[in-house]
Image (cartoon, rainbow, N blue to C red; front, side, top):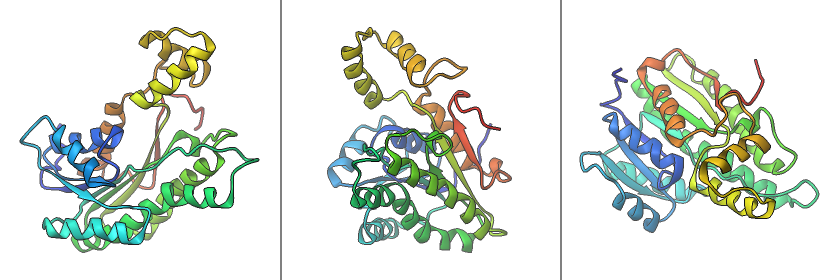
Length: 266
């Protein structure tokens, strides 16, 4: 299937590592020009050095999205590269630890800045070009916790819930502009970070450290789902890339879960 994004330019936040990096390289595989965002030059350099295909049209941009000045720095670098953004993927976010009885007001504010306002800053910068061009795609990365939050990390789930809510609001605000706005909400993703965290837990619980056995323990204890496994980063990226394409032009204001059916929600 030709996704028709060979002439599009995409910005992926937090693309120096993890799922964001897979999204960025998958967009590049489809022929898009990709701005790979990192917070530091060192992170950007490492991500660019790790690219395996010299044909990828990927350029690094650096800036701290937790400040207005850092977001402006990213936009200024895009302009210096002669780039205007058609596809914005707000991948950056962080599942900050914390509990109801100990979280400070400052930690609630930090979670909102990390998981909501970092995306808002880029949206406000990128939508004028999309409006002028009468075409654009905005994809926000959230979590199934915006449907089904846990008792821990309430500040994180609240901020991600606000991000998902803002998707619907923005889709309505951008009516009749040719721009669609959607949320992708993964469940647990099979990443090195998740595996390390559960290996530490496995030592305490006496679980096997064998990769396949450990994944089954994770599914059984923390993430039961009909598919019986965790998502891969590539599976999340594939949905993002489809939503970024003209072929997804009538999917708008939606929150689509990549969770193997874990959340029982109609």
